[in-house]
Length: 32
Length: 183
Image: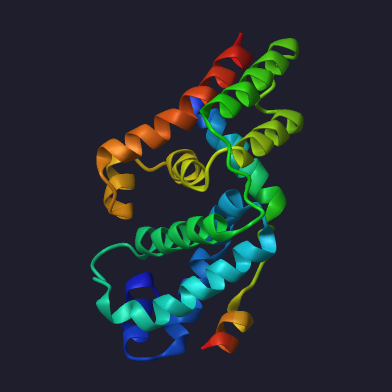
């Protein structure tokens, strides 16, 4: 339970910082 | 297309394989880098570079294994190295860590359902900044990626005892906060 709560907290923090719709493909292609 | 087919394409130099892997893994990878670096722009740069590295290193990858652990290992290592080099990084010792988490525990006692609240998430976020980059990485690996200590040691080529020590130093303080918040 405690581990789940910590995971939930980190997931919430990460979701706020990094949206679901990021797309790095153009940037990566430009670096190749 | 599945992941194995994407890797086979990539090994033939077909960028369509990389396209599949980026779509499948970019969000989780950037979130892992963000939790360690605390900088979303930096996290995106790290993951872009990790995919570029994967493109050139894919020939050495055993395609019978899962791509994600191999790839996230490079993301975690790159994130830690970059932060360790950063002049902005604030390193604090065990005593300072202790005081930060003691303060968190005190706050947690005053309000119910703390861990789920945005406020405490911010406190955890702030407290993680006070951990060393390596300690922060093991917290992310253990709780966000749900890796066992054995997996963490294997993936980072680090002695199991070192991983255990790093994890205990950070985890016990976080657990105290979570335990108090449940009362």
